[in-house]
Image 1 (cartoon, helix red, strand yellow):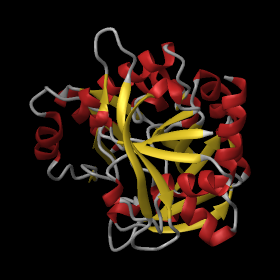
Image 2 (tube, rainbow, N blue to C red):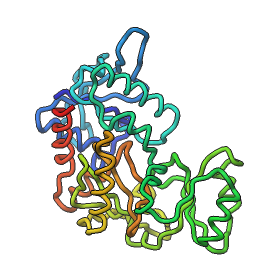
Image 3 (spheres, rainbow, N blue to C red):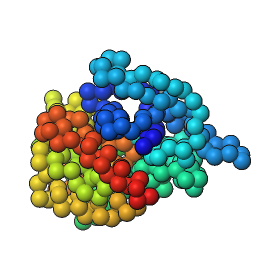
Length: 316
């Protein structure tokens, strides 16, 4: 197959842990051709198909100069056998517009994973609200008064922006309400921006688990991201320690239930964030942790993903 990866700049990749790199490496290993572009490289002109300025890549196996560009060219997205959308958040207006261009490419014959419509319909924080049976007390609002009432009820809470990633912009407020007003002002922008508020889950001490679902089925291992040094965030980008572990029965049951609902909507790859027995986020833009799980357990998540991709392309 000819596979186009829509990714962040290649120069920003840290290949020891980058999931998109792991996907590319596995694809090339199987004889597939790998190309890459960034979202700004996609364009759609009247009377033409959606196209992009793409780079055809050869992965070298070197830890520093890890790729060579064998060609740089304009290409119709419909001419690739698969297009993998791996752009990191934020889920902002530019991301939204990109999914619309990818939907047009689909109408022209492109096979895009995850499906652009599904990306639009499942913003990563809000998507959990469809599954109230799997989440703790949660509120999404622009109202400062509603946030204060939620705090008065639950005492110990987490506040986060809807479009952040890597733990950015997450605050914990305890029973004393210290700095609650200031934090609301920072995140809420005087009612201009929605905020997600969740009851604090003490099980974060055992890790914020990344549970991967590929083709509707849970990967048998997850990565528990354990907060370090007084942090309340387990995110690896915030200094969390990643510990791979086998799924427990509860994690597997949640993943099977969520996968059964979301995979038929066009979400080939999903990353659940689970604290204790509660789902806190459903990541669909560019779920990670493939390499950390493989390094610690030998479970080749990239191979599972390319298996699922090959099957999905055949069925599309």
